[in-house]
Image (cartoon, rainbow, N blue to C red; front, top):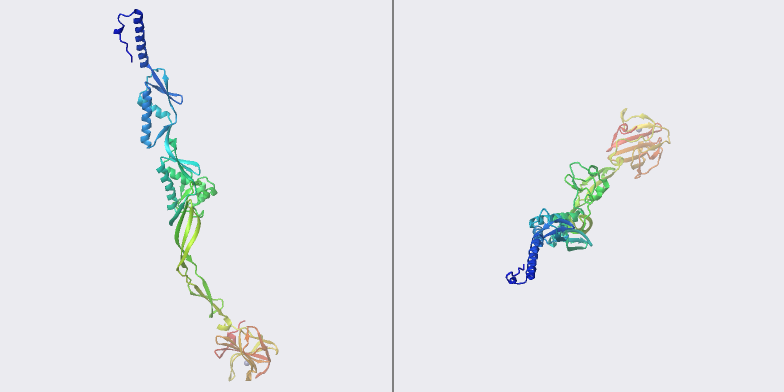
Length: 452
Ligand SMILES: [Zn+2]
């Protein structure tokens, strides 16, 4: 402040003295006024209070920025301007530095320097800094890589990703975990449900009031809607990842090689009968493939190679070809003709009757009692015209005293086929058929082998 030299005024004219006094008064007045001067501090037109000097505002602002820098580890920017103007002295006095700082904190929006992750030219989220952004992106990739089996071949991100430094609202800065989940799920809050014992997707849809189809859409990781295991985590809303990550992995797995069945004909087995001679066993093949996963979902598989680890064992089935009558001899023959039995099998006077006699008119067809091969067709002593059929298995049938013979030796006949006609040839007293059943050459009572 300028103080005039009063000594120099002595002996000067009264007017000059008065002038000097006026200057002194003015200077004192200015000093007094200065002492009472206040500055109004306001933000966005809202008065925070008065301060004694602009210095107080400067210091408070500096402290505020320092405090955030320490807390956030990042540079910050204040959105609004702090306005300082000459204020009217108020009853409640002036704010000191600490008081102003507190008021500034309450009313200022702080913008912090952060890194915005842009995906395909749209701002997706912001994190603290570039390193954080990079590690978040890596964590997203790692999530998809570790989520599927196999050896990593490559990771591809088809989206354009850009990191941009910007001052943004402090509340918009996400923590690394929040950022990762946001990119993975397309939302900050992922509503999930952990499957309980015996719970179906229907139950969960109903309980959470979500349409069933929406729930299925929200969970593409589920292969089938009815395959839930307790502990599975189900998304309650559709998950739309913000970043597309394609993971290609090489996998090796074993696949079952189904066995083949080979049928071989077996004449020692009855027709229609099947016997497994060799049990079939599936083989094993090792498949190496490249599997493409898009956002954790398997979309493609390319087989690189296959190696048979264990050959399958062919199942061998024997199929019987032996027809019952030809080979086994059923023991039940059909009646060759109808008629009255005039002589039974067995002792007859001093003789032995080796068959049965069935009386009927001459010319009536005589039919094969069973299928077989004609081993004799011709004249045979007392039998007259005789046909013998071999049925296999030691069984033979004889048809004697025939008038005519319709088959010849070596011919195959089927059951019921006409062999000849009833007659009176050979040693006979009247027209009848002498019918015999022999087993391994021994005559047996035909009635025991004839059917109804
Ligand atoms: Zn007889």
